[in-house]
View 1 (cartoon, protein in one colour):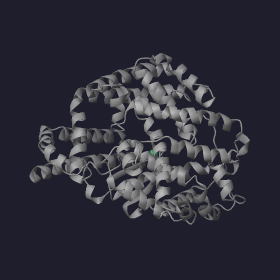
View 2 (cartoon, protein in one colour):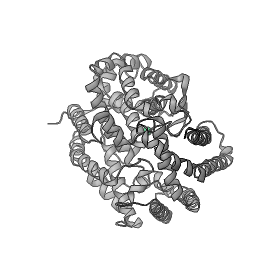
View 3 (tube, rainbow, N blue to C red):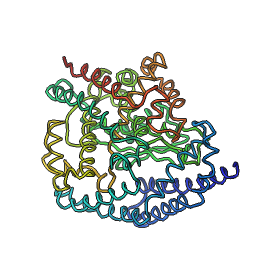
View 4 (cartoon, protein in one colour):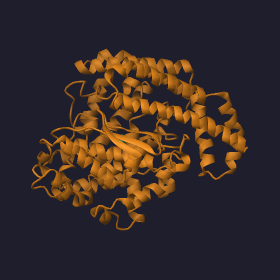
Amino acid sequence: MQDKLNELKKRLGAISDIQNAVSLLGWDQQTYMPRGGADARAQQIATLSHLAHEKFIDDTIGRLLEDLHGYASKLSYDSDDASLVRVAKREYDKARRIPALLVFEIAHAGAQAFDAWRKARATSEFPQFAPFLQRNLALKIRYAECLGYTDRIYDPLLDEYEPDMKTTQIEAVFADVKKEIVPLVHAIASRQDTVDNSFLCRPFDEQKQWDIGMETAKFLGYDFERGRQDRSPHPFTSSFSINDVRITTRFMADYFPAGFFATIHETGHALYDQGVSQSLERTLLAGGASLGVHESQSRMWENLIGRGLPFWKFFMPRARAIFPEQLRNVDAVKMYRAVNRVQPSLIRVEADEITYNLHIILRFELENMLLERRLDVKDLPEAWNAKMREYLGITPPDDADGVLQDVHWSHGAFGYFPTYALGNLFASQLFEQCKKEVPGLETSIEKGEFRSLLDWLRARLHVHGRKFTLNELANKITGKPLQTQPFITYLKNKYSEIYRLK
Ligand code: ZN
C-alpha cells in the first residue's frame, strides 16, 4: 500500500509544481509583466493549467485513490495521509464529472463576457452585458447539473469555493445577520456626524505609506524571509510554496486607510499560508481550507485587530512619528473612531465592516433567484436597486455603480460572494474562542505583542492547511459549527459605543 501512496504523492506533487508555476505567472502578470506580454502570458497560463488538469483527471489517479480508500479509512481522520486521500478524492470526483468541452465553453464565454462587462460598465448600459450574463448563467446551470445536487442548484457552485457548505445553512445565517444588522445600519445612518475621519482624507506621502505598511506587517508576524510585498492595482496574496508567500498592496495618495488596511488584510492571508505544516508542502493540502476560512484570517487581522482600540493604543505613537503633520492632534481613540466610520455606500469593495455584509447578502439572494429562474436577467438591475434601498437605504444612480460594479459574474463566478461574509462570521467566532483560551490577549496587543494570537491561530487553524472544511474547523476549534452570534455581538457592542446609540 505504501508504494501506491508514494505513487499518488509523486503524481500530486508534480501537479502541485505546475499549479504553483501557474500562480507565479499570474503574480508576475499583475506586478511586473510589461503590457506587451499579455497575449503570450494568457497562452502560457492556459497551456499549463490544461496540463495540470489532464494529469489530475488521469485514470491512474482514480485507480490509486480507489485502492487507497480502505487503507486511508483506517488511519486517523486528521492524519496527513488520510486527509490527502480524502481531499484528493473529493477534488478528483468533481473534476471527472465536468466534460472538457464545458470547461472550454465556460472559459471562452467568460473571456467574451468580461470584455462586454468592461464596455457596459464604462457606459453604464446593462442591456449590453445582459446576453453575455445570460450565457454565463446557462453554462453554470449546466455545470451545476454535471456536478449534481440533491437540494439546491446553488450547492455545487458554492462547493467550488466553500467545500461541503450548503445554501440552506448560509440562508439561515444570513437571515440572522440581516435581522440584526439592517436596523443597526439605519440607526447609524441617522448619526453620520458622530464620527469625524476628515484628517485621514488628506495627502499622505506614498513612500511613507509603504514604510508604515511594511513595519506593521512585520509586527504582526509576517516572515519576509519567506515572503515579500509588491504593488498591484488590486491587492492580492499568492503562494508558490509554504516558504514563498507574497502579498501586494496599493495606495491612495489622499486617503490613508485604503493602503494601510489593504496591507494588513493581505498580511492576514499570508500569515495563514505561511503557517501551514511543512509536512504538507508540495501536496494539495498546502494552502487555506477554503475561501471563507482564508477570508476569516485576513479580516481578523484587518478588522478585529487593525481596527481595534488596543492596536491603536500601541500603534498611534508610531503612526504619528511617520505622519507628524497629518496626525498631529490625533490620539488612539480618535483614530479608532475614524477608521471605523460607517457609511452606507454604493460600492462593495469600499464598504465598512458592517454594511459590507449587506452587499454580500444582496448578491447571494440575487444569484439564487437567477439560478432558480425566479428572476430574469433583464429584470436584474431593478431587483438590485430595490434591495439596495431596502438594506442600505440608498439607490444607485446608474448601473455602473449598481449591478455592473463587480467583475465576478462576468467570469460566471456564481457562489463566490458568500465566502466573504462567511469569513467575517468565522473570524469573530475564532477570536471569541481565542480570548477564552489566551488570557490577557487584548492587553498583549496594547503592548504590541501579537505573537500569542498568531501562535494560537497557527496551532489551532493554520497548521491544518486544507485538511478540513469550514464547519469541521469550527467544530474542532470552538465545539460548534459556524455561528452568527459572536459576529453580531461584536458589531453591536463596537458600533453602539462608537455611534453612541441608545
Ligand atoms: Zn481577502
